[in-house]
Structures are given as structure tokens and as C-alpha cells.
Length: 494
Image 1 (cartoon, helix red, strand yellow):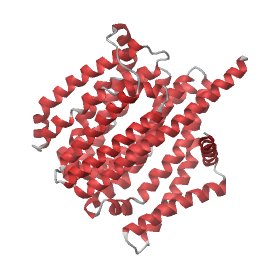
Image 2 (cartoon, one colour):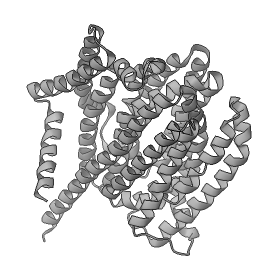
Image 3 (cartoon, rainbow, N blue to C red):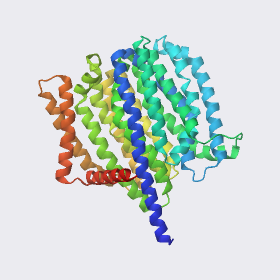
Image 4 (cartoon, rainbow, N blue to C red):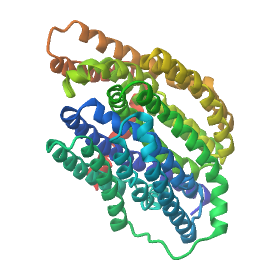
């Protein structure tokens, strides 16, 4: 085979891997979060906002501990071109040790944390929920290997089973009157099944070895991501800490429910992009032209979907929330309408930051995170003194600043400046904004029940989006549609 033909074959292989990975990763996230969302709706009708708020109070402590367990080694394994059995085994034993250590820290500090929030029940909840650190530690390397190989099909199968079984158990326990413990059991069951199935269906097993050299090699890259991850995790969850401390468990429950609605499209898309784009872009990191072209295409298609879904959710938030989880959650509507604007920028952050990791600039990644998080301080202060809605508005402006910083530096690395990025995504934003405004206004003048308004707005939004895109032959939409057709035909032929 000539060198030219080999290059073409390599490009086709990368493209097919990327497309397959995107499809299966999207299906994985959609099923997992979709099932979680549906289970959450049922549980929201059975439980009170304060019970969801109790779980929200534990989030920052579990998340920070989990950052130490991973310590950036997942990204280091994925980025390293030729990982050995020694590399995987070294990371595995490190994960287990750190998870056990931080579980003990959580266990013995749970009483102090409960006193901080003035919620005595929180002590036992945190002691039991903390077990997910150890459970997750057994899955880190397994997931890293599957992600490195862009094998999201198996991950999809496992996560769907884990979500369904854990959701069914949680609903049964909630119906029996166990309150917040139904949420605890749901989380533990989901992660336990996920970890167990990974070990049953994935062939990798650790060997009895630990390499200091391998550890230090990956730590040099992963340590910066650890610090970055800690800063980002604390930033994302500190609002739960502030609301739980200065407001009430019920207010925190309303806020976390708004976050869960927002996360269905926002985190789903962000997770897909992070999981798939990093290994794919890392595989072509030395080809600047291909890297920029692939990255640009990702941004355009991702943001058309993201803007449409997030602005659309903000437009239908009242009819959606009241239809799905009831009048007792009305306060959630006000938070959701605002927080969707924050969530619509998350995939942009993920894509820009992935470029820094692909280029091996975890040092720059860390510096940016430190700079950006300084802007969170006024947001927290405003939240304490002026309320949760003002805090969310400040979060949106922080997100804009973060996007500017992320895109400036990532753009410089691949010659894709902020101005060019904005030129590529602004038409999608205008289209989504117009669509959302029409949908929102339509709901103001309908003298029907919330459920009928919700169905009408949902249908109107989808139809209007397709009609506009077809009428103006919107390029990004056409490309997505054509690629979707190709994949559908390929699946039928198999």
C-alpha cells in the first residue's frame, strides 16, 4: 500500500472511530441519564425537596474525594500512546489505596459535616454513601481502557443495566417509606452493578506489580490535572455547600432538581464530547491541519445541538417542571430558567480544554483554572447576600469569562482564534434563540393545563427547528442529517 493510500485509510479509520464513538457515547449518556431522569421524576413525586437537599449536601465531599482517587491518571492513560500492563496495574493499585484512605477520612469527619449543616441525619448518610469511592476505584482502569479503545458500546450496555436495576430498587424502597435512603441505595446499587459488570465483561485483570517509574511518568501529567480537577470540582459544588449552609435543605433540593433537569442535555453532550473527542484528537495531535478541521467540525455540530436544547429547555421550563414533578417543585422553575444559560456553555469549555490536554499543556490547563476560579468569589458573596437567583446570574457571567480564556489559549495552539470560533457558532445561537422565544411566547397565551402546554411547546420547538433548518439549508444541520443517514444505512446493512 502506498503512503498516500495508507494516509487515506488512516483518516477513514479515525473518522469511523470518531463517528462510532460519538454515537455509542451519546446512546450511553442518553440511556443512563434518561433512565436516571425518569427515575428522578418518580422519586421527586414520592420524596420531599429536603430529602434531595440532604444528598446535595454530600455532593462536594464525595466529588472532591473522587478527584483524589482518579488523580488525573485516567486522562494520562488515555493520552499515553502505548500503555503497558504495568501502567494499568500501577494506576489500579493507586486508585484502591487512595479510595480506602479518603473513605476513612469521610467516615470519621461525617459527624462534623452533619453539625456544619445542622442536619444530624447527614452523618449516617455520608458514612454509607462514601462507599462509592471504593466501588468506583475498581472501575477506573477498566473504563479508561474501554475509552482509550473508543469502545463505548460495552459501556452503554453496562450503564443501561445498572441504571435500570438501581432505579427500580430505589422506587421500591421509596414506596416503602424509607425517604432519603432510597436515594442512597440507588447510588450505591448503580455504581456497584456498573463496577461488577465491567469486571465480568471486560477482559483486563491487574497483575502483582507496582512500578515507581510508571507512576512518576503519568503523575507528571496527571498531577496538574488533579489540581485542576480539584479546583473545578470545588467550584462546581461549592454552590451546593453555600445553599445548604445559608438557606435550607428544601432550597437546596429545588436547586439540585433544576441542576438535574439542566444536566440531562448539557452534561450528556459535555460527557460525550469529553469522552470521545479526547482520544480521537489525541490520536491526530501531531497533524495540525487535521486537528483543527476535526475540532472545528465538532464545535459547530455540538453547539447547534446544545444551544437548541438548552435555550429550548429554558423556554418550556414551567410547563415541563409542573407537568413532570408537580406543583410542590414550582421554585425549581425560576432556577431552571436561569441555569440553562449557564449549562449551554459547558460543551464549549470541554472542547477547548480538551485541546490543552491533547497538546500536553496540563500546566496551562491548571493556570487557567486557578485564574478563572478567582471570579467565583464575588459570585458566592452575592449568592449569600442577595439569593440563589442572583448567584445563578453571576455564574453565567463567570461562564462567559471562562469561555473567553479557554478559547483564547486553545485557539492559539491550533490556530483557531476566538473570533473564528464565534463566527462558526453564532448562527446556531441565533437560530436557537429565535426558536426558544417563539416557544416561550406560545406558552403564555394558552389557556390549557400545564401538561397540554408542555406537549404543545415541545412539538412546536422540534417542528419549527426542522422547518427553519430545511428552509435555509443550514449547513451544520445538513451535515449532521447526512451523516446520520449514512450511519443509519450502515447499521441496516450489517
